[in-house]
Image (tube, rainbow over all chains, first blue to last red):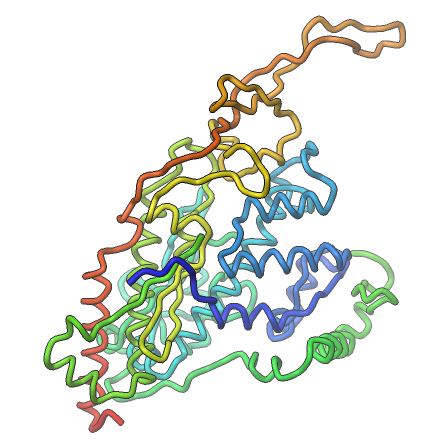
Length: 264
Length: 210
């Protein structure tokens, strides 16, 4: 039976709800040093200090997650917000917030992270985890210049089954191969890699598990966060970050995370 | 618009599977059915993404891959619903007529690869030309003619010269349905049935389905 209306992707929506705005002048390299548990609770973009822009962007990502808008429309809306509609910019310049490449990156990465988390947490349902205890890293989008994922897999201590990159869902390899330190896709910016479930029979054949071992489901503790109000979550994120970044960065009076002693 | 598919195994289930399904609480088995259907649809959509580049040949929007990533299941009281949360996927499946909304008069259809995946508002140099009551276009400004240079060295005058059609504008667009956007319903349910069966059999082998 086919319905006209989609169902909300509840788990993806939850991962959006825990994120608090984090305007910052920090660039990607320093932002990557913030622990993953904090980064997945913040909505930021490297060097973006404008909280109003971040708010508009996060609202549009929510609409993308809900299947209520498309990327071109969302990007156009952000350009309108920035006052850059129709401006001549280098559309491939990732450092220019007005470019297609940068706005697509903001929208795609956040959308795919919400969906990746949703797929991850649905895969951690005890029955689903029992039936599909493993997963495979697969290329789903061809790239002109593909990253060397087999090398990254090997460097992270991954085992190959022929050429296949398969591991149990709760293996630490998934966070190790991720540029974001997270156990779910996407594993890097603009990545064409994703995950495919591997059933127990195949996992047994690969020697990863036996018939009776039950894996312990994992989560990212978002439910606990969602018990608190957004204001409490925001305060908690800022306090933790302020403590963690002591001597490196500080929140200014407008709530922008700034490098101590000037920009990088 | 996005859309959702309800998976019902009870009608076509084998006697063994039916007994197994009856012996399990829905909360236990429905996630397996939902995940199985999600996996089948994801695999199909990722496959479409590889095999169907946009016909204009421009930069790809990865529409079907994004649809695959937006595929998910939700367990309900009376079954499982698999939903594809991606704008445009329902239109491709069902087809039908699209009309302008929000007070607009035209539907913009990309005519060139540069326009694919972009909205007309993202271009600064498009001009409206109407050919018929039911057909217009947005043309790119190619340059100016009859320019002159004044005493200060500034370029003045000249008419705009219009170049390539970037978008065709139509009062409505009718698309044919494309049922191949989804895998066959039988494939989804047979795989979900097989996955549910192996799951239940394993529970029995372990000594119970409680």
